[in-house]
Amino acid sequence: MLRQRTLKIAVAPAGFKGTLSPKAAAQAICTGLKKSSPLFQPLAAPMADGGLGTAEAILAAKGGCRIRVRVRDPLGRKITATYAMLADGKTAVIDMAAACGMALLRSDELDPMRASTFGVGRMILSALDHGARMIVVGLGDSATVDGGAGMAAALGARLLDRCGRTLAPGGGALEKLARIDLHGLEPRLKKTKFIAAADVTNPLLGVNGAARVFGPQKGASPQEVEHLAAGLVRFARIVARDIGADVRNLRHAGAAGGLGAGLRAFLGAELRSGAETVARAIGLKKIIRQSVLVITGEGRVDRQTAQGKAPARVAEIARELGRPVFALCGVLGPGWETLGRAGFAAIFPMSEAEADVLDKKTSYALLRDLAERIGRLLIECGNPV
Image 1 (cartoon, rainbow, N blue to C red):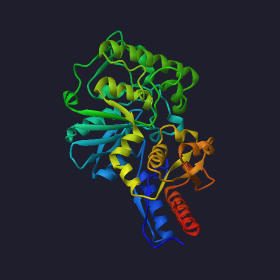
Image 2 (image 1 turned 180 degrees about the horizontal axis):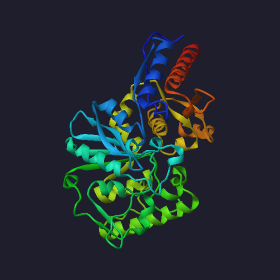
Image 3 (image 1 turned 30 degrees about the vertical axis):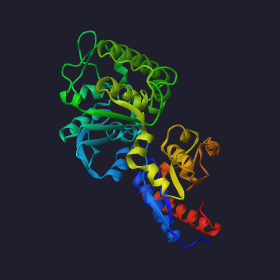
Image 4 (image 1 turned 120 degrees about the vertical axis):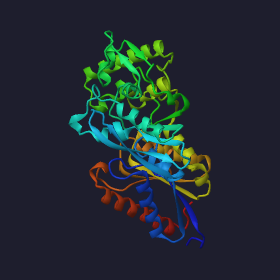
């Protein structure tokens, strides 16, 4: 049996897409561990990597409030989006997917030729109105491939064709871009620092760029992918000429359909790893240092998990500090068996079903019960480390 002492366990999952937020996933795991033994003291540290849940994860750690704002979704329809204003009163954290994410559209509505990041610009304006002087924008789970053109338009920039007409929304219009006019850009932006927190490292252009890699995932046909890629090439060229920013080969610039490039070009944003940004904001290293074991997870664990996703960053920190790390997930995907090299001591799926077909209540119960079983197994083994 274990010695009768409290054992702290860092619980740092990302969200389970479509069912559980990072906070809810952490709560489920903590509840299960506590049910398994009073010896366990879970330390909840919800994680994210730039996609949905980034604002919530940082808000949970830093404190503050949620701000609701009316914006337009990727196809221009009015919706209400939420972002975080932290307790310091000066920092806002925005998930771009709250306004322009794939989750806002039905599968038959996905259309990156028309989808726009205009709603992200409206969220930024709201944050400025609430006194933000530091704005973190999470780049992940987007439905767009417009290079941030829509965002720039919402902030007062004019993107014009050869006849001086304003471009239509969406990535499909970028092939017609002839000139960018920044005279009407919101002046408060110059006094605001921006951080773009990306969930991928892809550049804007090329075979690994925003259009060719992510366009098909967002509903683009092969022919549309070619148009989107050509539009981003033209966008980058006009940005370099009219703004003086070279965004062609920047790491993370292709995130969120090129919104990373747009944030850098129009707002001077610093492009960062989303997982690293969140880990620093929530003090994850300090929490793991206090713990004997680390539990992370996400909805689907596969070979992409090791490519900059939140669980991989958790595992990296745990490995640096000499702590074992378990990953809990909704389902295992191709390549999961290779993740031992990324530092995961064990990986546990909670169901044979796809995570995104489970409702929130069922997912919460399955994750809680899985954590409880793991806790009991640790007790039976005599030592969790």
